[in-house]
Amino acid sequence: MPDNIEQRSPRPGTLTKQQKIDRLLRVDHAGEYGAVHIYRGQLAVLGPAHPLSSHIKQMKQQEEVHLKRFSDLIRERGTRPSLLSPLWHVAGFALGAGTAMLGARAAMLCTEAVETVIDDHYARQINELGPEEQSLAAEIEEFRQQEVDHRNIAVELGAKEATGYGPLSAIIRFGCQGAIKLAERL
Image (cartoon, helix red, strand yellow):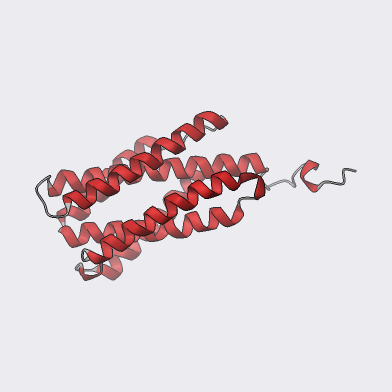
């Protein structure tokens, strides 16, 4: 019997390290893809001249950098992207546009709710990555800090003053958590 636990076959129902990394990359790629489309939806409704547009464009640009990096990692590590990418495209855009139609504060509420879930999600991933994945953990931490910045900007721009903040925020957070579970597997 091998001395190293990692050489043993995993118990039925448990994931290997590679399967865990595949899920991590798949869900993070899907999340960044959805985030880009949330900001595109917000910009489509608010328009380029809106006072929040410059903030939203900057956040979208950072999400595009995250998306590119996860796209590269998926390709480099031979991981398949989420089979639900068309859903993330439509759902992200609809969420961004829909909340922006409710007003600028609601658009920022959306950003605040999504980024709160992503902050927690990335923090958990960083804690789960072993020492052999320090480089990946450092990249995710850098992205996490930018997501926290997005959340803080959204709060500064009135997210918590949006009409219906409590229920709408809870619905968006619940939806994001569900999307994370789906994207890990599909």
